[in-house]
Length: 234
Image 1 (cartoon, rainbow, N blue to C red):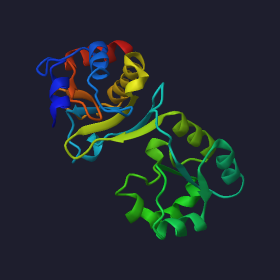
Image 2: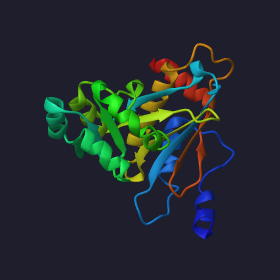
Image 3: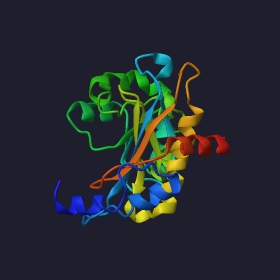
Image 4: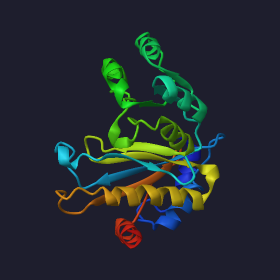
């Protein structure tokens, strides 16, 4: 991985399970890139995603956002199209937007649609689905209030879902945010995952929680502390 990576590894204990506060402090110090590295979380949950009732998919509004500019496409007509534009959507359309995407254009990070547009948007399932861009009512991106949805995404609302191994990957912001803002974003994610725990999930729910910067090593958290913190905040 290079000398700089090896030097960074010496700054923390790879075998230790850190508390939330200390982990967020440590992760912001394990950086060496010349750019403002992103900080991400990988949370392995005690769920079986092969069972529909244990597949977790939702969204959470991070208190401090992600530090990234989110490009939003909105499928809407009439007054709602106008409202989406006013709210800050990067592109708004209907049949014309569908045709543009079918032609290969995919320069957006999230998509929102009004319910009446989903029949039209459904034609893009093979294109948007694999990229995680398909509007979905479970995460609030199929809605009549497109203006609110646009504003929430611009402000830092993120979508997440368990992958096939039961891991949720989510951004927590930038190293430049500092430990406190990273911690508050992480707590918002963990508290949301706690509320979403499936009633059919058995055994230990928090298998592992790791946070890392773009170029830095992973810092593992004490899952017992994670559980006590989220339960105290519930």
